[in-house]
Each structure stands twice: as C-alpha cells, then as structure tokens.
Image 1 (cartoon, rainbow, N blue to C red):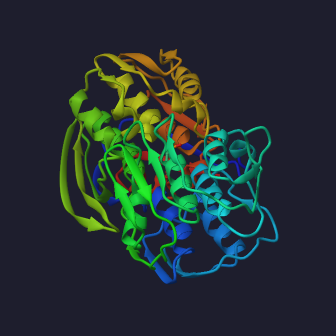
Image 2: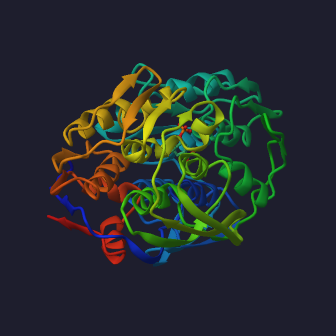
Length: 434
Ligand code: S3P
C-alpha cells in the first residue's frame, strides 16, 4: 500500500459513451527527459506525462544538474548539456524504464553514481542490463543483480549483443551506453520490442542502422535538441478499449493515441476476439503515428496468443485477462513469462485478485488459460502497488455484479493520472476516494 490510502469504488451497469484523449505516452516521456538532458540546447516537450514514474526520471535529470523549466505540468523546456556528479543516489521510485535507461547513460559518464528505487523496484531483475553493460566495460556493483546499482567510471567499448529476451529497456540501455563507447554497438533483438529509443535518437541526429532484427549505434554524435509533442499512451488507452468492448451499449472514441505498431498488439488481439474497433490514423507526433480509435461493445470469443504478438502487447495482459473472462470459449496465452518480472508477477497477482471476483483462471509458467464467459461478483481487491493491476481491477468492476472496491488505487498515477476522472467523464460509475 502507498501512504495515502485511496481506493476506487466501481459499480457496473452504466454504458461508456463519449470522446476523450488519454495522457501522454510514458515510454516517450521518460525518453524525452533522459535524451533531452544529453542534447545540446533546449528541448521543448508538450503533452509530457506528469506521472509517478516519469516524475522520477525528471528528478533524476535535475539531480544530475540539468535545469528543467516547467511551463505547466505537461510542458517542459530541458536545458541539455554536461551532466554533473550527483550528490545523492538517483531515486527512480517504481520506474523500471527510468533505472534501466539511466544505467546505460551513467555507465558512460566520468563520475560515479548510485541508482536506486522503491522496495518494488529493488525486487526487479537488473542482471539483464548489468551483464551486457559489463561486457562493454562498464563497472556496476549491485545487490546480487538488483538495485541499488553503483556505477563507477570506466571506458566503454562497443559490442554486438544478442538479447535473450525482447526488451526495449535492455536495448535502450545498451544503445545509450553505445553513445559513449569506442566503436559501434549492435543490439540483436529476438522480437519487436518497442522502438521509441531508435525513433527519438534518430530524430536527434544520432547515426543508427535499423533492420528488423538489429540496431546499430555509432558513438560520438552530438545529440540535437528536440521540439516534441508526446502522443497519447496506447497502454493507457488499452483500459478504455477493453472497457468499451465489454460494457454493454458502450461507444467511445479515443483521440491522439500513439499507434506505433510495436505497441498496438492489443488491437490485433481484440480484433481476433471479435471486437468492434475502428482505427483512423490522423498524423504523426514526435516521430510516431497517431490516430483515433472508436470502440463499441461487442461479444468476444477466446483466442490463442503467443510469439511476437506478446511482445507488442506486453503491458496489456492484465486488462486482456478481464476481456478473456467475457469471451466465449478458451483464451490461451503463451510465451509471456516476462509478465512475472514486471512491477509485480502479473500472472500470479492478476489471477489471485480476479479469483476474488469468483473468476477461474489457470496459471501456467509462461501465461494463463481462461474459459469464458464467466460471471463476476463485485469484490474488495488490491492493486499491489502495480498501476496496471489496479486499473485492470477497476475495469473488471465495471462488469461485476454489485460494488467493487480496489484498494491501493493511488499507484494508477504511476502511468495514468486522471484514470478515474476520464472514466467518470465517459459515464462509468467509478470514483476514486481517499
Ligand atoms: C518499456 C519497455 C517494456 C515495458 C515497460 C516500458 C520502455 O519493458 O513493459 O512498461 O519504455 O522501454 P521491457 O523492456 O522490460 O519489456
């Protein structure tokens, strides 16, 4: 539980209707701050996501001596340039993206730093970045492969690294360290991990070679500053897309959503399940395709999900579980063992909490099986300090009989501040109370 004990109170029965935008993309907002601080000159960012995770990256940049002007909560000017040795540990709180990307940057600096975070972040695996960064020559001490990480200066050399798992965080840490290395760095990826780092570094003038399977970065380029409008976060839109699909009579339109194909696997999964989705690309923001998605209620059928599609929707499985409970027939998810090392073990935690609604879920080592449709009964459930778990529970509450209380709703603000207000704006019977 986070200190202030806020909770969602949710009741079923109201269709969701209306138009809304979703907050800025979390992955891109982290990168805007962390890459902007390395650039020469002023990087201007609009629609920046002011959320728990991204604010932690912003504070880390400030601790490294970077001046950041806040014109309002979502509009920043980052005065990039030389980084200074931090006088205290960089505290990334719950932000896995923040700590892993910063580790790559810190490995290339001429000063020592300590990267740390919450108890939750201290439980997450860091060997996946420590090992390849060490192959580049980085000196990183850890608590047996976990944070806190102590990074001391060492010369880096470029490497060719085949990632054992398709991880954008690992890929990004290595590409960022590669900017400070001798020679080129190549990261080979076993699947389509999100490519925001490549897009943003490319638009900042970094010399990158991109193929479907690998990325190569050349060191030594000066990063040019950016003028960036952050698109809406598809992973936040995902909760509303599932809600609009499963709540009878719903019809909602989401605007300004990032439609980068490395992120939109849930659209493919929902379409295979029979969802009623209309996707219209409207333009490009910050080097990413954006558009509108209209979703109307539809009956769903079970689906099998594995392979590359898992990578393209890795953050969406908690809410997909809720959709699967509404689908006719069996939904089987494989190849999703990465879910076990997210903010929580999302297979075990989601299955455990959904059982409180009366759901039956079979956990497997790399996924789950759900037979539906199942009737859910309102319950008192817990968010486990995992934003996507808390919000998925709230969506389950929209179709459960009676009232649902989601304890520990505050963590939803790690990625989606205003979640309850947006749902209420769409007429859902959902409030956040303290
Ligand atoms: C992210 C990458 C993904 C994702 C996380 C954000 C990023 O993690 O789950 O929410 O911004 O690079 P992995 O790279 O560990 O798969």
